[in-house]
Image 1: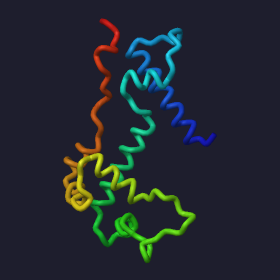
Image 2: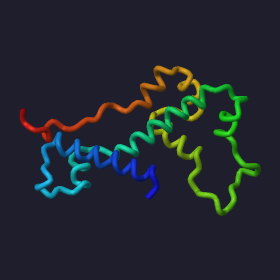
Image 3: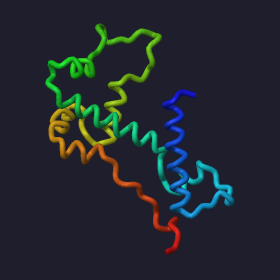
Image 4: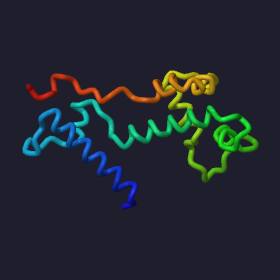
Amino acid sequence: MENCQQNQKMIDVFHRRCLRSIVGISWRDHVTNDEVMARTGQAALHDTVATRRRRLFFGHILRLPTTRPASLAIMWRPEGGRRRVVRPKRTWQDTLKEDLNTLGVDANDARDTANDRARWRQLVTPVACHIPTSYLLPT
């Protein structure tokens, strides 16, 4: 297993252990990891971190002048508009458009929105972990 995958696994294990503690699930209760995540309504932490970093990076690229290589590369399309057959079907641009739709930002207005750093950070930064109070331990 690659080092990155090991780190992702360790982050997710720690996250689930914390959620179990918050919700009050003991290891003796034999509750599966999927059940813990379903009860708390949480996603895998490494996915949340990766999504946030990708969106922050995209905002940085959008704020660059359009003449910079990174800005040109992010919007580049192959000549003829077609990819080779061996290429993956999902492109970086597809991922970014999906992220923008999730954030509620029109792809045409993304550059203007990213230039307002405070608004962009507010859109990208996820709300703090929310666990329903019915799952918390009584104090």
